[in-house]
Length: 116
Image (cartoon, rainbow, N blue to C red; front, side, top):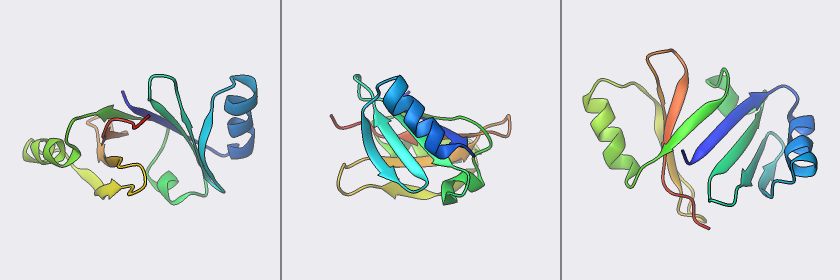
């Protein structure tokens, strides 16, 4: 797994918990999104309930690391998997990610490897 995110109505308290209690290094912070980068390069996202991403997140979301997000998405689409939006790309970090619906009704995702 490369990324795990959680939606919370307690955004500030959750960010403070991960940063100050668990001592995780905060790498990205905005009013409704924070991300921590772990020692192995995995990322932990905290999404506030007023964030645009929160519209489809109904619990923790896992993203699996793949070598090529576009190719992996195409393969899953060919297998009938429904995706949520397009592939997102962060120009600064080179990361790419996309989300899809699992058969259990929960969102999952694909992500490129974290850049340390």
